[in-house]
Amino acid sequence: MATRLLDQKPQYQLADGTLCAGGSLTFTDTGTTTPRNVYGEPALSTNLGATLTLGSDARTSVDVWLSGSYRVVLKDSAGATVWTQNDTRDTVASTYYAIPNPATGTNGQVIQTNGTVYALATIIQVPDPTGSSGKFLTTDGSVQSWASIQTYSSTSLPGGTLQGATSFQIGKMLTQYGSAQAPTAAATKTTKAVTFATAYASGPLHVSITPRTDNITPAGALCSYSVTSLSTTGFTVTFYAGQEHGAADWFITSAIDFTYSVSGLVA
Image (tube, rainbow, N blue to C red):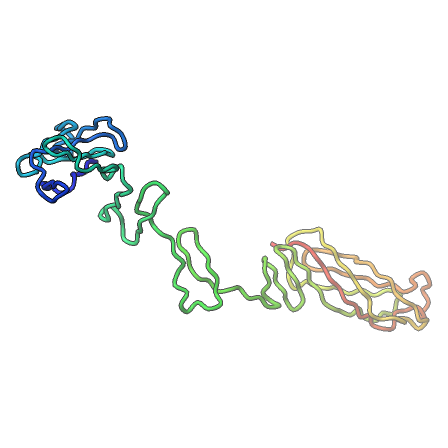
């Protein structure tokens, strides 16, 4: 890029303010005496050399354009130096930088810099928070938005966890629990079938039984138990009281209360 020297047709003056008619301008590399050419137009096609003679009107006969950084010396018609000016330079050598043409950008873009040049860039801004008290900033991968904070209760827990009245589920693992009662019997054993509220998808299943009744026979016997049937839909538990005796005072004459829990996978 080239820059015109001062205005187009300045009149150069001597120290006393009179015109520097017949004087000259000498151009060198700034700070040196090495000649540096000037040019007749912005394209730098016409080389005017490094010295220009002023006319009787103290003007140059040509338009003067610079390329780089110059030391300019004004001399009178006798060749005596009037003044010397270093660091006369074009815009490339100065600290001026081109601003991007807004017509090349899009709506909402701003001027940014990478530390070397200016460029138009899209700025990412946080959405207006008005009316979004208590919400947090999130994104779908394309736009930003405010979202409500998830709240949980005993029936809605994080990570796919569900709490029911008689169940607790994490993912596909379901635990069901409840209570039941095995009836009295004119025998030393009694059974009780339990049906699950929710059927399981497959085994293995784990059943835990806790008897809640003691002195179930006239002889005051305690009971033992066994899960004698187990499927994805329920189980049967059998309670025993001194089965090896067989006498009536070992018959189960009190109903047996018990609690249970079962764990396994659901669909």
